[in-house]
Length: 237
Image (cartoon, rainbow, N blue to C red; front, side):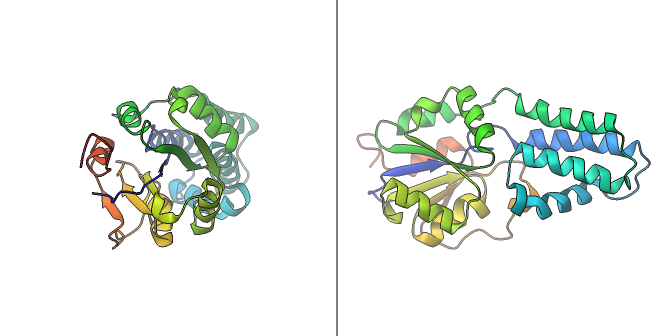
């Protein structure tokens, strides 16, 4: 069990509260088909990943950054042969992602309903501000959260800023998310608590080789199981 004293519980958004990464995989498959029509024999997926990583510092995370990397990669990998029509279709892939309905993961509402009366719940996610705000509006769960923090990245300094804004000590904060690299390790390094809820698909950039070795680290198989770890007054002891 996580010790008493937790005041704020932070939830990652993408692939913790709702489906996200599978949509990127679908988009990559569509992109692969468009670019393959130009007779490209290179590793398209590898070229796209390299393009995304090289653009992170400039564009950050999110669908719009992904769209720009798709366009740049298409020009590079086809040696400039890509047509304006194909670029229009590539942009259409991104627009389609931005308009997708929100698909909540299993047990999200039930877990939030159980925790909200006893803790201050927040969303701590990274990506494009407009996109993430739109997702939250369409999710039907925004009323459970006291605060929504869209970060440019999720490194230790970003969590320090978040904790300062929340006016709490690290030991009073619990982070829940699917990415060990972004959601788990940085808060743990600050002295906070963290629960890893694995998702079946993870972007290669977020993968790590080993789980953290920390007494503040917990791992569950599904979101519902976090309720067995958190001391909820009057429910578990």
